[in-house]
Length: 204
Image (cartoon, rainbow, N blue to C red; front, side, top):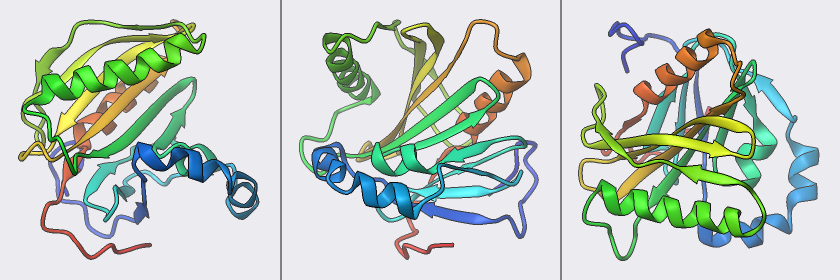
């Protein structure tokens, strides 16, 4: 993978974080206590680290300077949660084994329905209309404004080329968060890539 400036990254630390699908979230709560003891609450991530995640490590993202990985939240909530200052980045790998959506808009609609569950449980959630965007690695992604309680930011859908999987992302922080932290979060989103040929399940 290249770095944020397009230079090849050599010798970057690689981390594989398995993410489970939403259907097994209830089963995971049964082992919450054991996982909390086994993993530190958070871990600083060296700049340049390439984090591989997804069921077989088929998705990757590169982390810049100053980020911390929340291992407890990443493990228990089927997602990767990174924080820098007051800004958080949550990346969730979604695989469509059945009923594959036809396009990114349908993926966005699915994400909106999940946010609606949080809304009905008492969380204040607002999701804006999506706009299409591309990155170096992703074509036909969608992003839109997001508010969760008092936190504001952006939601993203980053589909694989075959629409068989996607990464759903949320970047959130307070209104007065440091602009450098927002920029660093955008760089993580821009680095998300699918490696469809990688089925080794390599771990660090």
